[in-house]
Length: 429
Ligand SMILES: Cc1ncc(COP(=O)(O)O)c(C=O)c1O
Image 1 (cartoon, rainbow, N blue to C red):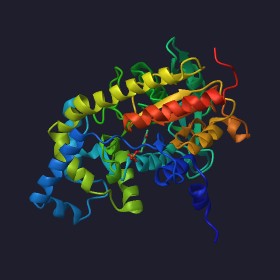
Image 2 (cartoon, rainbow, N blue to C red):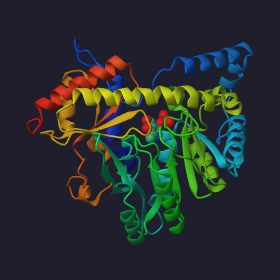
Image 3 (cartoon, protein in one colour):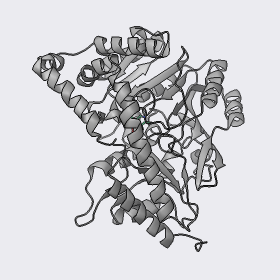
Image 4 (spheres, helix red, strand yellow):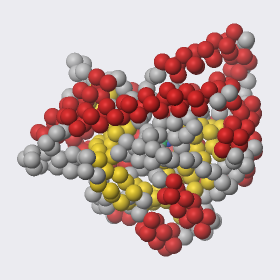
């Protein structure tokens, strides 16, 4: 059997496949698991109660049966779209209507559609997607249907005294890249960023927005963890939208990952295109998540629970995670990214005597499942030539999902620290 170029491109080994595979595959018998990989959000009882109540209402009134018994339009469920439009236009004074919103089967799919709409083969040339701040979400790396579609600029680094650091946009390099590469079809980033927990500052977003306009290309912002829901963001940051911004959102990280609901807010032309792609690829998005969330968005309940429950829940968890790191890594050469948002902690282990992709395998034998950092660095010319990604953190970082129960996170981190001591190049200071 032979697959087409498309078939080959999307079936070869990818970081996201390994990650999702890890989620579903049990560890060998007898090993206690410490699952710090994957992207599952936490189960928060107040959030679950809200959904339970809503589902009870839906089943009682037979709304549930009516929702599951018919397809929605390719653009999405019109009642949900109207709720999103009225909520965002009144909450943020954005000039949007139902024409500016499309629903997909999850934001992973939204990004796949968007990347391949704005990059790939054009009549006489190829275009790319520029990620202006590497490391970035592993799940984008292989989404292009052609090779070489993803390009990137490595982040700058800002180290702090308390063993933390922050990735910062290299504005000069981004500007120079855009000026010298007219084939860039769109700029894209996640904010908060998976894997690092970074949040691009408002002025960095404004800079990128200006650059995108200057080059007449869209700015795609993946807001899967951001405001107003799920609001897993712990730093001062605002969200913004204009006709040149494509804002991607999701219901996944507010406790609904399995119902696959992605929301895109963009100019009408882009929404029409997404609706058409939806029709061809999947007819329409699943209705259930949209029906479940619609009234919760309209009433402001989803925003309230995100702000009052979800945000503090994750902020406290991430702070505790920082404390565990400081306790167990004490005396070693370690750093972690300031936790500004998302459900991940990004550890930098400069003295590791091997690449994190190998360390990851050792950790797994002890039951600790993480995501090695290498997959989050992609889109460099060096890699095209078989070299490493040009970033000092390339093979020395691990992504830890801290959404699990505290004991698991704590003991997982303890084991990572023990093994780091064992596999460090330098003796401890
Ligand atoms: C930054 C980012 N974008 C998009 C997604 C995809 O989410 P979903 O397809 O569940 O909406 C994820 C999932 O982990 C993510 O971390």
